Length: 480
Image 1 (cartoon, rainbow, N blue to C red):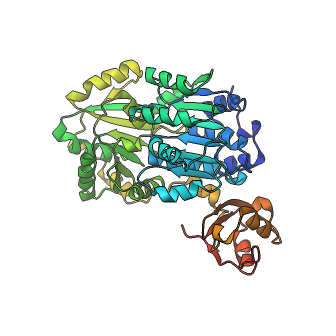
Image 2: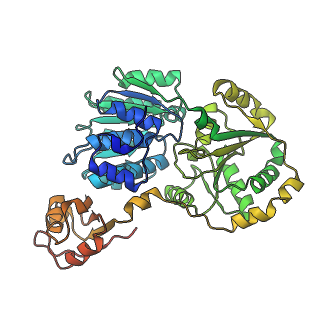
C-alpha cells in the first residue's frame, strides 16, 4: 500500500524540502511503485496513464542518488518534443533545487553552439530530444562516461514520431553499467522489442487506473458534419464554459484558421504548432500555464507530456488518426485527482477510431445531441462574465523559487574563476551558509549564482564591495 506522505520515504532533507515547497505531499501510485524499486537500481518498465506523475517518479530517485561533486552528466533523459524537454528540465531542477542539481536541456532548432557551451559546464543531468542528443554524441560535445541513469520518457510517442533509429543509435553510446528506465502510457509490440535492446531483467510496473481515476474524465461524442464544426465549437464552449481548454486540430493550417476565427469572436486564445518559432512556442505555453488565456488551439505537439494544471476540458475539433494520440490528448485533463471532460466532434470518417477506442482502450463514450442555438443563448451571460474575468493559476516553479534570487557576476572562466571560489567567498558573509548557495553556472565571461532562503538581497549588497580571488566583479540581480 502506498505511503501517505513523501516524508515516509528515505529521501534527503533537501528533496523533502523541495517537495514541501512544490506542495507535493502524497505520492501517486506510479511514484510509490517506482520509488519502492528504483533505489535497488534495477531496470524498470513503467506503464502508467498520462498525468500520473511519471517525471517525479523517476526524478526523485535520480536526484537522490546523483553525486553533486561529479561534473559530468550522470543521467540522460530522452523525450519526444522540445516543450517536454524544457518541462522536464524545470521539474527536475525544482526537485533538485536544494541539492543544487543542475540540468541541461538540448533540442533541435536551438543554437548548437550555445548548447555545446552549456554541456561543457557542470551538469548532473541532460534531457533532450533524440535527434539533437545524437548530434552532440556524434560530435563529442556530450560525454556519457559517468552516466549512471538512462530514462526513455513518453516512449510510445517516441516510437509514433519515428525516433526508433535515433534512440537505438543513442543506446549504442551508453555505458554498459547503468540503470535504465522506460516510461510509457501504452505498451505495443514495438515497445517491447525496443526494451529488449537496452533493459536487463527489468522489473515491470503496470499501474492500472483505479475506477475513480477512470471516472475523473468524461468522454463525450457529438456527431457533426465538417462544415458545421465551428458552429458546434461556439455553442459547446458557451454551454460548457471551460476554465481552461485545449482544442486539438490535425494540421497547422487548421490551427491557424481556427485561431483567427476565435480571435474574431473575441475569445482569449492562442495557438501552438510545429511551424512556429521555438521561442514563440515556449512563450505561448508559459502564458497558458499561468492562465493568461483560457483557450489553446494546438496540433498534437501539445499532447505529449505537457503538464498544465487545472485543465478542465479537451476538445477534439479534429479526431486524431490513431488511438494512442487520443489517449495522450485526453491526458491533458483530469490530472492530479481533478475531474476533466473531453468532447470529440465525430464526423462519419472518424467512426472507426471511436469503435477502436471503445473496444481496445475500454473508453465509455457518452453521446450528446448537437446543441441548439436556443440552448447556447441561455448560457451567454455567464459565459461572457467568465471570459472577462482573469484566470490566475499557481506556477509550481514560481512557488519553489519565491525565496531564490539569481545573481549575475561579470566574470567567469576567462578570469579563471571556479564554483568553489564563489562558494568560499559568499559563505563568509555574516548570516549566510553554504546551504544558502544554490546552482552556480559559470560561462566564459559571466557567472550566475542562485541564492536561496531569502538571502539574495544580503548577498547582493555585500558582494558589491567584496572581491572574489582578488577580483572586484560587477554584480546585480539577473534579468529573466
